[in-house]
Length: 188
Image (cartoon, rainbow, N blue to C red; front, side):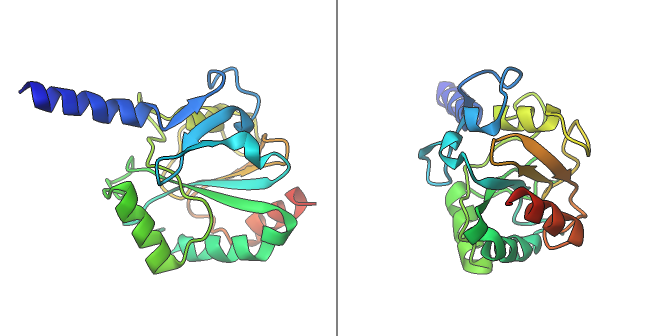
């Protein structure tokens, strides 16, 4: 019984430590203030992306929107030379559509969609265990929407200064004219 309890506590601790801000999410002024874990478990300080335009996406492998991975890869390839970098954050918050381990997710993404952009450890994007990065993203000022993420594959366009520029719902695909125009403007 004690072993199961310790395992549960360790699993909960892992979820809470996958995105550790330098400041609290409420005090953060940009995504550059957060440290997260890569899909391989290494710490990644998001300040290394200063000067780049980011598209942060909560992703899932078993979702009706999963084919958007192909659109994300295409968008990354189109704008990479202009400074766009897509960051994928697997989450199992919606319909349990990301049940796999980080290793399984990595294998799926590279094998099925040839994902070459950075992927991060699975996080929670809503609820009491919401990762601090996503606390920041869902409360940051932007012209589109604040509040909880509606589903998998919501997209957050981040300016070179690390601030949220735009937020796109699941149904707005990465290759839609709206997203492409926003990316073109942000990478200038």
